[in-house]
Image (cartoon, rainbow over all chains, first blue to last red):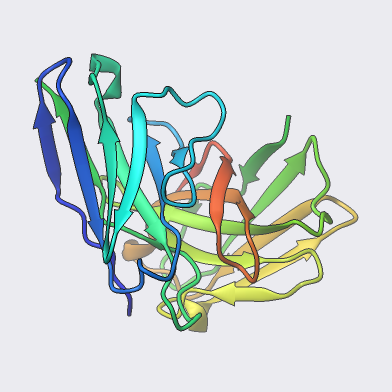
Length: 109
Length: 122
């Protein structure tokens, strides 16, 4: 199977910068996507193709990629950003078309 | 605005078959640009891809579930469906349907249904 690894939790104070990483062997070859999920809600797409932001997503959310790791950065974290964040990608063999990371709980202190 | 809505029984008995339907409105399921997928999330846990289907009927499944999953499409009703056989308590989850933007069953999921909780219990 193919796995994407995320830290289970990240904590930051309001106004600080939060960085959430996602690691996977195929990430140099496959795009990564990021989703935000708040309790009781469906996931919302935050980032596509590693660093592209859909319309309506605040500019404080950004994405980057380096080797086998992609990073979601939230600048100037706000209380409303407290949520679970998931990365998503695919393996390089074409077997696993959609794979999610285990998710990261962002806590705003 | 494209909308997706899951429907089906909220309670399924162990060893039986889970059946859900996703109705797409505000757009055509027959668009050549998209796949359509099912994702689930057990209570308190992460997201798991189940599988995806193209309007032509071409499917891709999660290898870990492939032996129990069938996804089908009905373009006349603008719907696609999920069947999961021989369910156990481990299949208890919120089941989401979503649109998948990309080729060959991979890509991003910009549109999701609200999700429906399916509990497996006798």
